[in-house]
Length: 387
Image 1 (cartoon, rainbow, N blue to C red):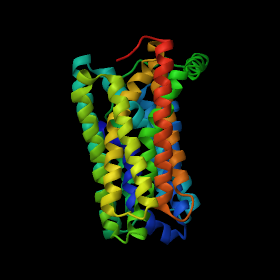
Image 2: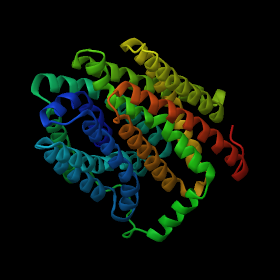
Image 3: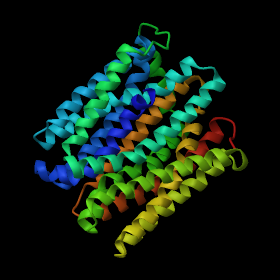
Image 4: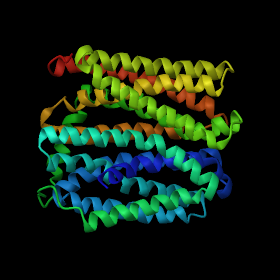
């Protein structure tokens, strides 16, 4: 059940993507409005990153998780019954804010209850499932949408949220020693320290641009493949699942090669792969060569780089100041998801989804490359050189 709680936040984003065109038609919404159900969802995940960590330290993991799952479930019911796109967008934002509790606290609960060596094993299993889950989500979402209707996707999320809430309430023990209060002055001081570090800002912006910019393509995919390329809606899930599996492969390669290649070299090499994928996609679209094969090939290259850049940039970012690792992780997650929300929103502009997504990806990849290299330069000035 801890896996389902951790999965709740990201699963709800990926599972709804195949339903976007059909839901938009039912609600009388255009492409840009439907893409807001994804970009605002990502924004909810971003804000939640800053909220649940301090709350759980003060009140305990269990109350924070119960609050999150309650918000997730209630917002899910509102989304399920939404009769307008505005209601759906608002409900999806709060659904993400609630679901972020599991995303933020699931790993913390493992660290609370297990010895370091045992925690590594459990986290490895959890990370594997969290990686595979979103890859399967579009397939499930497509199946539900085509067989039972798009609202059943939202109903399934409601049921998962209610089940998670019941589990936390009845079966999950408290795993932390709550302090009883939120130390806002200290938290604000930690955030100010991080925001004054050019190295941290560079890693956060660079990591966000390289990793979560892909959400621009994910949210646009149904409109690109179905409306522009004329493919069946049921195929979109398979195309997206391949991209998420490519990220998992990048993660796997990182774990296997990190000690041999080195953290910095691996991050820069991986971000160059994403840059090549973003630029190649833009060239393909502008030249009129867009097809399932060409777009998937460029995105597979982009997402493979994402899988390797993500963990390396995060590791360097939280290592800037060892005294504020928790705050650094939360602020990095906020920046990452915030950039993802911005990129997704920008991809909804205009009447050519493929072109808009390609432009966003290419620009984000260039900014990411510049930001990461700038961060490394300042990092060498602020602290020890990392190899």
